[in-house]
Image 1 (cartoon, rainbow, N blue to C red):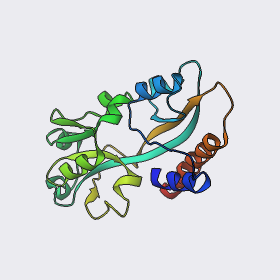
Image 2: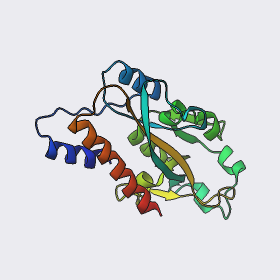
Image 3: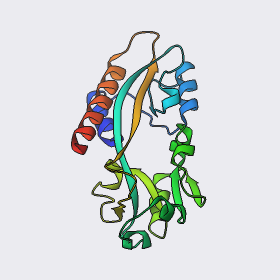
Length: 196
């Protein structure tokens, strides 16, 4: 997604510097308020839907997620996977989920590891364990051959996480920022339409 947005913006504004920084939600909001960044994409949690004063938000949508393992995981050989089965195995969880307030909700195994990088998490899954991952990542051409969806008895379809685009309410929105906002909205629309 970021690569598509970046390419579109660089084509429209070749002389503009664009930086993509990975920060936690609080750091992103602080950077917005301090004028250090123009936009921040964050995961919503039920507790934090309303941003702080001075920050505007656009609800980008609710992306689908599911449980995944490697193809050779012992969990894949079970006829029905239960919560108890997951609790007995290693769980890998992206740090972003915890930073968005989803950590305690999504922590299902006492054997869990917080991982700050998606590539590291995907590498660890090749050896053992399971993870909750967004469908657009886990079922992308890059990872489809490495990860397999794990059907569990307590999830009827897919789960969903909300994402929001935050920006400062002050001042005018210039053409680059306006184009970036529209690019994010378009990419999320396309991803959500592909999940339907």
